[in-house]
Image (cartoon, rainbow, N blue to C red; front, side, top):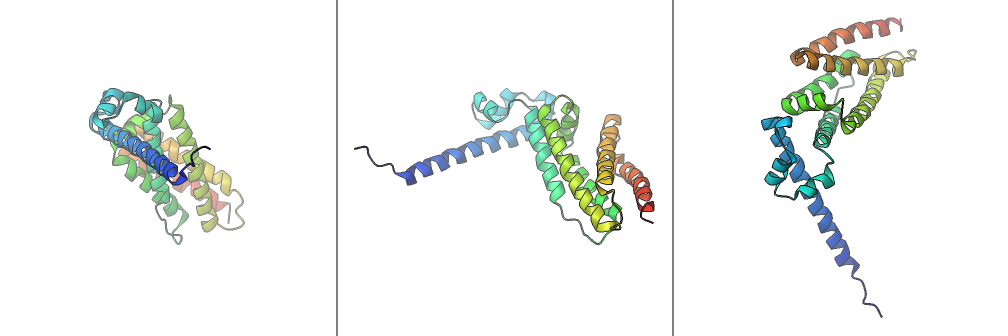
Length: 205
């Protein structure tokens, strides 16, 4: 007869392996972010990351096919935090949207080198593009919710307006980053948003 399998021990070993994997992932991830922010993305090699993390180079590629995947994960993380920030229901529509923009800009500006690198490599990184597309969809759904809460029930173009607002937000951020005018992002978005919402609210009269 075969010896009985101790499933409790097997589950414990599996749990420890998963815990070790997660620990290695977080060590690599946080080390890479610190190095990128301190020295600049282009000035940090995978060899430097694994050396400071005290893990094998092959382990890095088990988690991140390339360095830009770390930027994609970072952007996903900070945008998730920004979107989760509470926004009062009893404030005007424009203020709700601007609150969301402020949360986003605040978090990205806290790590300017990472933000700069993410924007620089977005056009050539599939992983960053996928995160951007998913985040845009989430923000659009949130803006649709704001519109439903704030505008007349007779207003039926909520999804179209939400899409235009997200396009306005992302387009303005790309524009100011390209021109080196990131400090003006909020003011520019507010100006454009005011005009767009004036047109939308005129339709409800």
